[in-house]
Amino acid sequence: MLDDNLRASRKTADQRPDLQLSFEFFPPKTDAMEERFWDSITRLAPLSPRFVSVTYGAGGSTRERTLRMVRRITADTGVAAAAHLTCVGATRAEVDAVVQGYAAAGVTKIVALRGDPPEGVGQPFTPHPEGYQNAADLVAGIRRLGDFDISVAAYPEKHPQSADWDADIDNLKRKIDAGATRAITQMFFSNTDFLRYLERARKAGITAPIVPGIQPIHSFKQISGFAERCGASIPGWLAERFEGLEDDPETHALVAAAVAAEQVTELLDEGVTEFHFYTLNRSNLVLALARLLGRRP
Ligand code: FAD
Image (cartoon, rainbow, N blue to C red; front, side):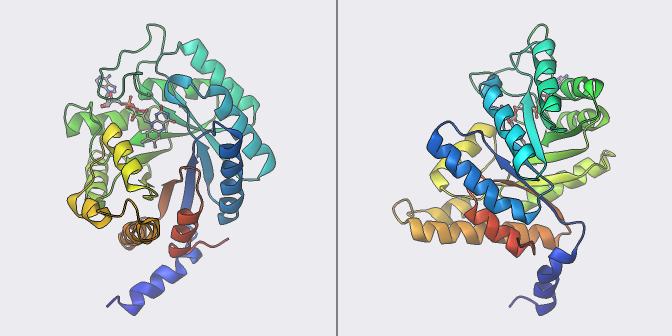
């Protein structure tokens, strides 16, 4: 049975001034999706996130929409917005113009990423001949343009293109040394992977916060597909929990809530106080998880 002291310490988590939440959204494509986007932002904003971030579609395909969303979040909600930005397939001048557009919209937080070639992460990456070489180079470029708060990506299971762990951690260090404030991780489902990664990074002298990226499993089929494409693994025990629930949405939703609750409360018990949630523009599960961490509207 769960120790009462442990439960009590979770209950008072909202009194921890160091508990920090951030929420990731993607720019909606249709009017109906946009309605859900704003509804979710409105429901999650009262949780006082440090920021909500809006992704940047592959190769800049959502450039205008990302800018429109972050501009409106900044102007209308009182919540800080962070805009994602990739450098794949673009010249430095094009990327710099996007950064200047963010600054003009009052957005000072950027999640700086390399991005993937159009064929996907499985294909080798070739920088644009006049472009930034990788995310570390992009961070340095953004720094030259102004005083931005920059987040970068980290990979608890190693980026699929890193030759080995040393190369992977060296790359994270280069991004932090170039001026990033924090790293946000790729989704992961084994907390052990995250804790080991943290240990590796700390041993390499990386002291910046490494924030776990939590992906609630709204649809096991969809999330498994995402995970496969980005090199995150689905542990056997997790697949078993969802096995046979394709046509049983109610049980699926309950299992999803239980799995995510277990993941965040375990991390909280390990002393983790910063969490980034991949919302997929939905609010329900994230609202419940924030409550478990002790944060209420
Ligand atoms: P980098 O840090 O540049 O690293 C990529 C790989 O290249 C690593 O394996 C690294 O070790 C290697 N590498 C870097 N430099 C060198 C070098 N000089 N020599 C040899 N190897 C090198 N994608 C989008 O398109 N839009 C988004 O909005 C988006 N948001 C994301 C948010 C988060 C929190 C995360 C974790 C990922 C996101 N991605 C997004 C996905 C990201 O673009 C991919 O994971 C991409 O494959 C790597 O980007 P990166 O910034 O980590 O690249």
